[in-house]
Amino acid sequence: MHNIPSSLREWFSSCPFAIIAFSGGVDSSLVAWLAAELLGPEKHLAVISASPSLKLSDLDEGKAFAARHNINLQIVETQELHNPDYASNPANRCYFCKHTLYTELSELAAAHAPCWILNGTNTNDLGDYRPGLQAASEFEVKSPLVECGLDKAAVRELAEAIGLECWNKPAAPCLSSRIPYGQRVTVEKLRRIEAGEDLLKHHGFQVCRVRHEGDTARIEVDAEQVEVASGLLDTLEPAFQELGFNGIDLDREGFVSGKLNRALK
Image (cartoon, rainbow, N blue to C red; front, side):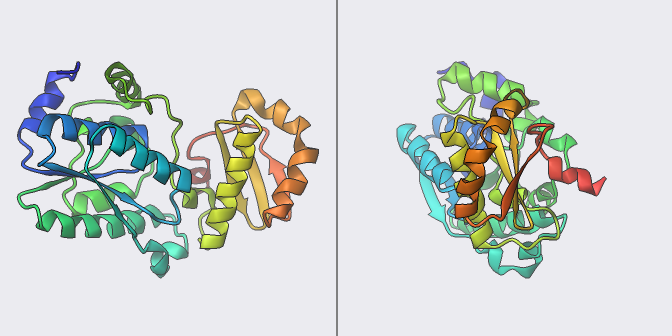
């Protein structure tokens, strides 16, 4: 068997059936792969949400990953945007998103009982502001990476050793995380953000964020590429205006994960 740590093999040995909250990122991809490898085809199901807040490219990559690695996959369409507690974009928006998702997964789990619901939380996630963890606790969702002591670096190292093509995939939180708290989340904004980030990637910025601040696109790229982006502003601005933004604002600090959470401090 692949070079899977004994702690993970032992953890999964007790699992009767696994339903995995799958997003296509490296963490949940590793958990889904482990479930398929250690439990077999009859005892796992990865579930990905075709939500407006998930990039269409991430959905396609998730589907391709599951097919390539013989992971059973089900696509659900969660309706968190219909929940005013989510759409109004409070600081605990992620709680309502995860509550909606885990409600769906709980219904699926009931059909496969006894069953565990798993997520891809790693130990680094425990030190950030993540209200979605509260929803996970309420639904008794299990986190094998946390329980076996894996941080993000260990996740990537193991995924690379196994040969998972997503091992170095940049973090890609939901598109709603690009909208400042208190500013309403809409499908139109999410699609505009996605198109803006696709545009930046077309220009070579693989690590990037488009923060939808009012009608302005606040652009974040890797700190080492800020000057490159600065030189392209005359090209980028009309392109972003075609997407529906009034203008763009380059963040000179560069990309920092969770930057919008600074407003909470």
